[in-house]
Length: 309
Image (tube, rainbow, N blue to C red; front, side):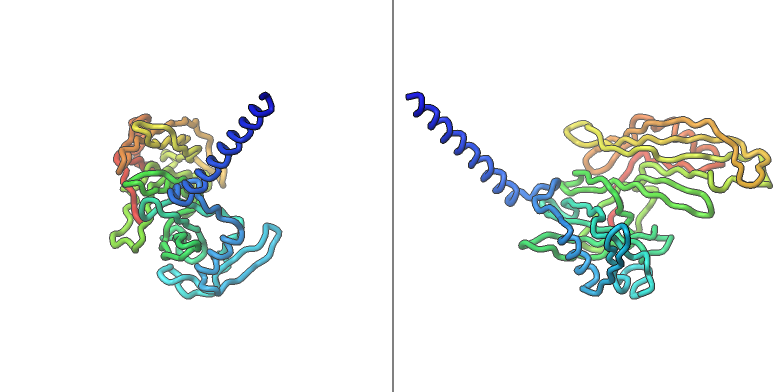
């Protein structure tokens, strides 16, 4: 009798394990979850994506960091379309690719960032949009000037995924950090992208350029974005938290590149996810007050709507 009970227990456990594995497999194929993807992108997939982007015309450069793949010419709709002398238009085989359901709910899509085919005015970068259908990746289109590199995926509008992207820039020695809300469309959007509409925060840092002999009483700003994180919000949505450090000091009589030190203060910002837009909440007022001084650039959004690429 004891042996019969043990055998029965084994059979029940085996049946439960079979159901669990079968259920997971069926759900993964039928449900097509946004993240994590049911079809994990591997190194071979990434090389295939490069071939799709370049229409098979690729260059491979080998170095100590691994193979770097680039197109023989920049894609149509880029600033340097057709150009062949673009050594920076490359990405390594292990470069991160962002996956999600970007253009419509329940689609399995991916965006891959490249550099070298866009000008400074369009952020130096662009991206390719792909869709996994019928067991294979398909190239949908090229995203002109899309600053999609190291972005966080956010379940957002009508079950589509949005992107929270942090970017940096440098112009005449002044650096800037910004955090933006982006969405990807199947078709090229007709309207221009409004930076002030989709920006949570933008700050500039003058540590690399503080010499101003004309006005020693003017202020210098040192600032950067320290941390960007998605946090639990209301109604099961994800809110956005940003930590930023900002400091200001008079230039004085600066000699050479010896910039004066400035006391710095850290600000914690929270933006509420309203389902189709974000609204500034915690920490907005003290940072918005810094905008009143003409010396330095600080941009903070009160109502943030996504820009489409």
